[in-house]
Amino acid sequence: MLSRRLISARQVTAALLIAALAAGLVGCGNAELTERYRAERMSWQVKTLERAMSENAEIATDEMIARVMDGHREIIDGFPPPDVIDETTDPAVVDVARISAASRLALSSMLVARATPETAEESVGESVELLESVRDGYSFDRNLAVDAGLRLASVRELTGDFSGAIDEMGDVLDRWGPAMDADGNVPDVRILRLPLRRASSYAVRGMGEQATRVFVEASETYTTWAETWSGTRTGEAALRMNADTYSAQGRWLEAVAIYEELDEAYGSDDNRASIWLSLAEIHASRLGDKETSRAYYERVSGLYGETTSGATADVALALMDIADDRHEAARARLTSVIDRFGDEEAIAATAKQHRAASYELEGRWDSAVAEYSALAAEFPTTMYGLAAPLRIVDMYGEIGETAAGMTALDEAAQVYQRVIRDYGGTPAEMAARNYMIETRLRQESWSDAASLLSETAAQYPDAQAAASMLIQAADIYREELDRPDLAGELLQAVVERYPGHDAAARAREILESLTE
Image 1: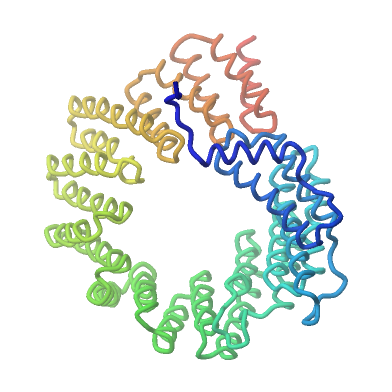
Image 2: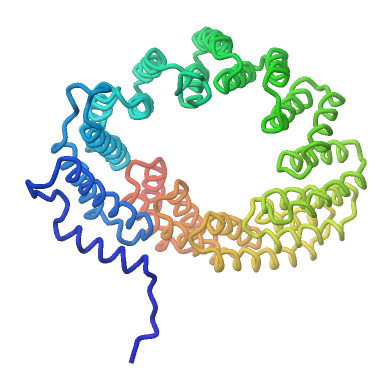
């Protein structure tokens, strides 16, 4: 009898490929194969294993990841950087060089991603060597060389070598222009972002004097590019980046002038809505000019109402109406957005959230509760849908309806339980768990809260908050449930699993207090 258990074709294929690769096919040594064929075959085998692991996380074991890394090393060792590549080079040689460079880039990323405190120096050093080899040895391919240079800058930033990162960015800017073609119709966004990225790197580190100087240099660079590539997509992109540069400095009037120039010189149905939305935002939130802002939003709504830009404009106009106590007009506009973009979850949920808030601000509590409840039911995995059940609880608390608030807490718990059950393994599940923990804490359901905290930390051990969750669960066992034994077990787990985390030091302190 045939089994009723079905497995997908993808799973069968992955299993067969993994078995083949694990058997040692990577690095076929048949001397009769051409260099290009050997390189393509080895690359295909490694990429197949990478794809299989990405489709099935269960097989992404340390052993399999090591096989991938070894596969890339075989390619790198077997096909060193070319001495010279120019227009006369055999295309097959160029193809092999690109395959080797791709493996160098892939291995460099894996080395950094899998580095531990013990292996960091060696792994980062090897990664840097690989990236430098691509940057310097594969300059015949702009994409490869630029990618390697930018990754080098990122690695140096990651390891605290800020000066080295700035130098790498400058080196990329010196070597490559902002256009990928002679006509300027294919702008290189990576290069175009670099002047602003360099300036912002100084700013976020509090290096104000240097940041001011580099922001000025960035603006001068963008001005030069805009003039050099005037009338092309590269020139357009340079103007927009210059507007972003002024915005990053809070120089709003200069940013407005650049956006207006951009609109006049390059405005079209493809970009005009975006330009007007930027101008509307600056006038409203930065210059306090609501009238001009509203005019820009209305232009976008009138001409591009069926696009997401039109929806953005309508929501912004509705918020202006709400701020001016024109709630009926605001809700009518928001209802129109929901009707037009009901299938666009993020847009519809946003409009529904603001419609609920409008009822709340008017003191129409029943209508607000109905809106928030519908928001949670219709869009349970969105930011607003997840927050809605506890917003109902808070609203009842603000108007002194204690009994209704307790009932709403019970209903919120049911909503979050459904999301956890129905959307396991998604970001929505993790968010719902956090809201569920908050719900149990508000209910003073201490045992449920502690269990959920420890369960979530166990299910997501690599999450940033995992160690803190275990600490919080231990605190509940100590302070609310009088179970220092269970608290001690969780604290010991923190010390063992997260030795370098700040929470480990806190766990040791609490453990010492428990033994006193």
